[in-house]
Length: 178
Image (cartoon, rainbow, N blue to C red):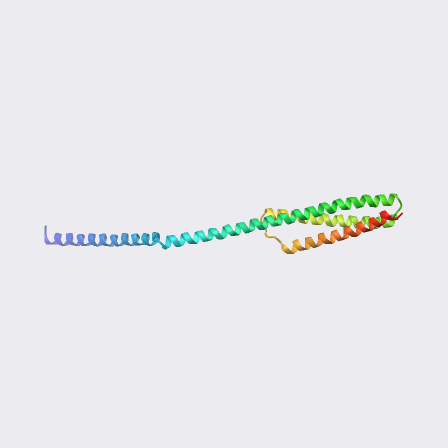
């Protein structure tokens, strides 16, 4: 081997050694990164803890939404029951009014006034019933509730019940008059 060949071989050997050294450093760095990832309290544990915290937060939120939905469904069911009771009472009052007219205990004019009031109560009940159906659809779609609308609906139901009670009292008076 000539001195030129020997120098080239040495250069190639030095380049090869440098490449191996750099490769080893890179491999060592990857190994260190992996070690930091899997070490207790390392990146892997931190990511896992963050994911578990997110999962817990979402499970809590889901449970709260389910409870809220059930509460809304119970409120709607109570409103439906109140509406059904009102409808039955209005039907009974219609029959009492017809009986009073037939027995001539009430004038046609007064009977017409009372009938208009019962019809107005019935129309209001139908509007509330439609509002209940819309609330049921919204609850089924997991839409957020409207507390103001629910309070307004409950107030309307109370007002309807008061109007129905006033009609009932009037019809009772008509029934006792002879």
